[in-house]
Amino acid sequence: MGDSNILEVDIDSLVSKLDSFVKTLHFYKDDYSIGNNNEHIGMCINYADLIEMRQEFLEELQSTVISYVYDKKKQEKLLNQFNIGTQRDDGSAWIKLYQHTRKKFRRNSLQGQFSELLIFNLLQYHFRAIPLLRKMPITTNPNLERNGADAIHINIENGIYKIFIAEAKTYNRKKGGLKEGLKDAISDLYEKHYINHRNELDLYIYEDFISADIEQIAIDYKEGNNLNQFEVHLVCIVTYDMKKDIDLTSRDTALNSLIQDIKDETMNFTTLKAYNDFPKHLRPRLNLIMFSVKALQDLIDDFTKQLG
Image 1 (cartoon, rainbow, N blue to C red):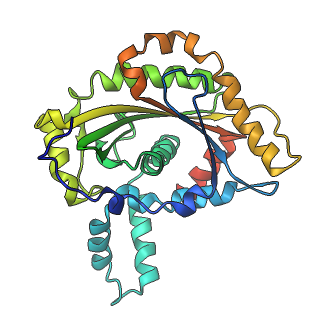
Image 2: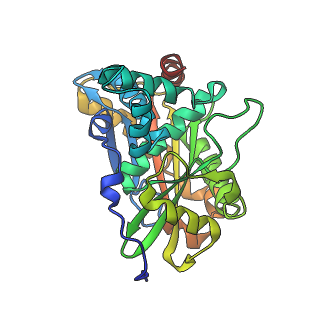
């Protein structure tokens, strides 16, 4: 039951504007034979007639980098520092800000940044959940592995702060596909992040990228205050290399090829040890997002070239 002392925050006003981004994607919600009473999300890059919107997807994904790194007020502050409207025109100042944010990304792990940028947007779009906490500074020593979940976001619903802990996997190996990626993702999500996340909250920060409206909520969650107000949900997103041929008879058949592969890969998912080891009481809170991509490594390479 919700708490009457919960902060009133207009979450919708803080969610990124993602209409242009999601137009480059096709979503299909289904239970995918998972059996936990949830609708899960299958997705692929959208098609315009028989042409995959691959470049548009990459451009729109990269256009969200600034919002990933800085909240709106921090963006305004930096734009003023970059002399918007005085020594620079508006366009030049925004380019300066974009170049500044790119430096925040780990050059040695742009594949990981691809996953984190993707889940940053999808948690907002599908769950109306905005960033609350994030692992360490985005840029770090290349020799150090960052610990912790890939994202911790928040929504407010029925008087409850819903915390979404997310794990993202980009699975572009020559052997194996979605099933193997999901096994790794749900195991890590539970064993490494859900069980330990409260013990690792010192690894997480909230500066720069969250609104001041929810800063107190982040502090309360880290400090263990008002715990009756919080409810934790879990999200796995697996981006994987779809190796089958795509039926290009029509736009619908192309999209169906990519979504059907997700259905095929999850058909016997509930028989897997990783799923059966996942606690039954948490299964209704488990949400899967499965991203079927043809020639995934080429997509990652293009993302790296354009952002790196």
